[in-house]
Length: 102
Image 1 (cartoon, helix red, strand yellow):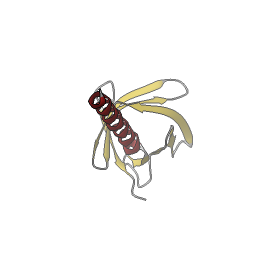
Image 2 (cartoon, one colour):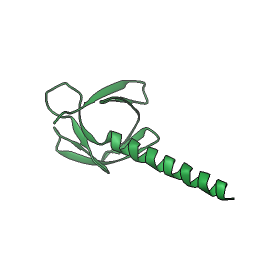
Image 3 (cartoon, helix red, strand yellow):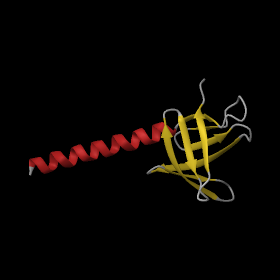
Image 4 (tube, one colour):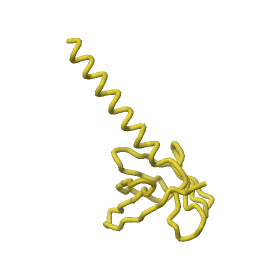
C-alpha cells in the first residue's frame, strides 16, 4: 500500500512539474523576425500583441494553444526547439517565432 501511494505521489509531482515547465516555456517575448521589434509577449494568462496594442486571453495545455480573440478562437499545436517556437495551424501552415533577446 505504501509503495502505491509513493508511486502515485511521484507521478503527480512529475506531471505537475512537466505542466509547469510547459507553461513557462511559452511565456516570454517573441518575434517573427519580420522587423527588429517583438511581435507579442506571452504572460501567465494573456498574450499581448505589440503592434496592435491588444491583449487576449489564452490557454496552453498539452502543447495546444488557444487564443481567445474577440471574434474567434485560434487553435494551434506548439513545439519548441531551443529558443524557437513553432505554431502549426489547422491548415498545416507552420509559423516560427524566436524568443526575443532583451
